[in-house]
Amino acid sequence: MKTLIIFLFLSSCAFFEKKSGGEHLYRYDAKKDYSAQELSSLTEDMVVKTVREPMIGGMDLLQDKKFPIKKLGIIVFESEVQPTRGGLSDKNKVYLSSAGKQIVTENFLKIWEEKFGESLTVSTKTLSENSSYQSYGSAQEDFSHFKQSVLFEEDIFLLESGKKTSSDTVISPRWMRDYSLVYIPAYDLLKGPKWNEHQRHMIQEVCRDLDLDAVLVIKSDLDWKVEATDKRSGEHTSDLLKVKIGASVLIPYGKFHERLNSRGISEKPLVNTVFANYEIDYSTPISLSSDFVSIEESLLKPMMKIYGDLAQILMIKIKSDLK
Image (cartoon, rainbow, N blue to C red; front, top):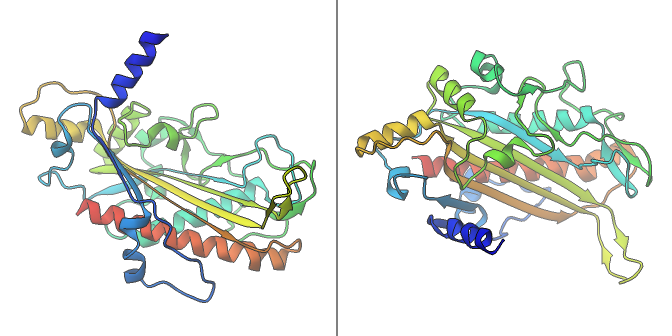
């Protein structure tokens, strides 16, 4: 056991890793629409960027401008929105049905596909039609069974403690594939900064077929807690909305082999190389209500606005690094 601990410690120290950002400078204001310039000014301080040396070649090879990353596609887009793995409500909270979670996820993806710009050279719907993409993973279940982009009363509601609710947690848009492993989201298996082997052949084949330089894997985590007072400590907490977004840029092994060839390096590892991992989060007090109209005003509108702003901050940072 002692030998294993020492080995793991040395392995973690063997590769240079750099982390930056993490300041919480953004402030939600229902009456304010942030300009692109204002959001851009927050990127360096707010976005937690983590980079790590590739398995072979060093950091300078990873950032070599002779191999620009210009053509991207989103290969994984997952969300955990108010997760209830046990299928029972634990407190008086506002919950989403499985269909509601999927609709929200698809609206999040729409923000990325509309705002990312020309670098996103293929849509997820086009990518999902690729035969290599379809050959791996499993089909994502369609929870709503008809075209729907807005939530109805049956999709979001208040439940008392102990009531049955959705046990579906990690959800993707209905046209995408599920590359998770048991209960582990695909994003957690693929994200950086460390290289990985998860779905490496699928990523290589899709990038080859669609002429992509790299792919994005993205996960959104949203949770809201109701106002409560702890019986033991007496500590009081207000209604709180938490939003977190993570994204990693992955270079397929074929593209990274081109970089190794340029340096005369013969060893060619078959791994996904992570250009960088990016994360951003924000929490804000809200005032939850029980009826649908009030839920829309007090939760859904702040949620979508905050998500849109944070996603744009991430996108601006990623695009800046890829220039």
